[in-house]
Length: 389
Image (cartoon, rainbow, N blue to C red; front, top):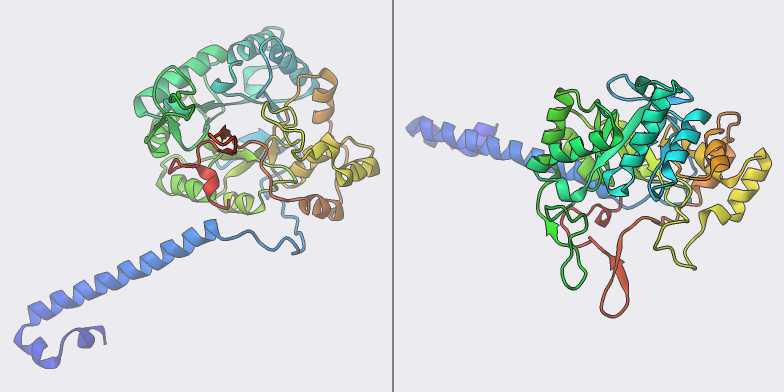
């Protein structure tokens, strides 16, 4: 049928070779059209509008979650509750690490840009030397900063993190943001008007170098931070070493249901940063939402005899999402880890999910000439938050 639509009987008899060439060309165009439709369908599946917030909440737990750990695609396990170190100042972070590990924390989240990896390394060495834990007992994450996305900068940045942490390998290394900054030692390179100086390096260039480090034993797993669905999918499809983890801001005001579902389809574990709403972020304004003060959240906490923070952490645990609350307060660090002695009902999980606004606490902003604040990096073609999720 396709051949008869391409050539008439007379044309086929007079010039069979030309007709066959036309036939194959038409068939190739048909295949390309089908592929384009499939690509468009998959793209739309990542950027479609959020579902109606009135739809009933359905609790879906990851099959890889066993209560205290989540299995990665390699079979290795990541502790579901960890300790975040963003905004933990030098002079405070070492004690936070010691208190956390002694309380049972076995998952520590770090990043070069946090400026505290040397002190964390000293705390880890102290814990190892005292026999509190062994290196293999801990799951330690760090991140590649935006100024080091170029291929020749990835390995030196990784090595600096390893040296500062006094480790021979990382359990997980993430690309901190998909968009890169201008190369160099200035971590926030800026123009005279205060705008950031960007680079056009694509994150796949960084990813290939991170894959090499996995092969050399310097990293056990690699992953992504602050990537959207489309970007995560691109990395997954192109990667030789598949992403193990996607780390993003996540809490009931930004519950990330669609992004979480997309990650699960790719067998990528989701990690929630700022799970308590990051109330201590430096750019917080008095009229910003305050998650920990939410009346509905407090009511749920009272029902279980738990703090609002413990309910928020347990909300992620119930979903099989690894969660990294940050604190430098000894009592809060211990309390944040003690969330395994209760379970939230499905009704309470649904109520927490219904808090979704969605609202981001951690979106870098820039004040422009008229005093208005706008997303700092939104003009960069790789900025992740221009997509719905």
